[in-house]
Image (cartoon, rainbow over all chains, first blue to last red):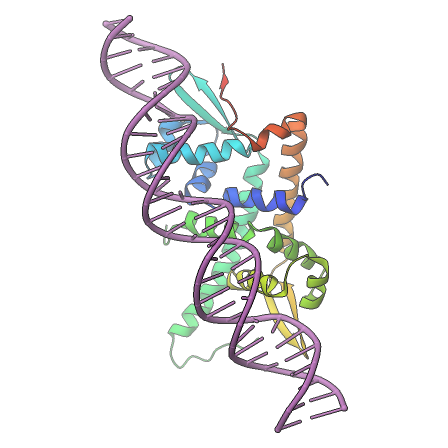
Length: 115
Length: 115
DNA sequence: TGACAACTTGAAGAAATCTTCATCTGCAGT
DNA sequence: ACTGCAGATGAAGATTTCTTCAAGTTGTCA
């Protein structure tokens, strides 16, 4: 393997590991969008958004197309949407598990489940 | 949204964004394994592996169980395996799509397409 | 109990990533 | 050509994450 695959995978996940980039990808799930719209929905400075879009472009997760005086971004493959769904499933599960534990901890006198 | 969900997602992906942690998760896809075995397959110092395992434990992606004088790790949910598969699909696609352009991936930002 | 093995933990310097600011490019309208 | 707008880029300081080393647990066995 030219570049260790697990290295590439790690890099890939790291590019997803940023709130703004996640939001961008989620917004693009519903179809292409101009930067202007992304900017309206994500609370971040224009130059910061641009930086994050550049990261997504470098890893080929999105494509940018100039249309007149605006730039339109789109997911480069629908697989990305599927990945985000898989992630959401896991997160939901992990969080509800934790949440259940938390509520039990908050209820004094209630016996803790032991596994 | 209760607590920014996209923040939690980003954190989640960041924990996957490390070569050693990825390898660990992939090895655990085939079932639980003692640290000793992980150590034999991953080229990393014991203390470093331990640090990475701690990260995975904190985010609840894996569980650790002491069995005699060894510690056995396991995926906390099979969904993790599915996520890794989805990631592999995307990566494969992105990489084959690029073909010869792969070399340029590292260097400058991809130029904008013009229409 | 003492020695050893298997891991974990804390801490600190090194390295990577983020945010922000100033500057720059490409396009449209005048 | 000049101006303004939409984004992009480079660079620097702040923040986070990594790696490594020394020291600490916990369990086993003699």
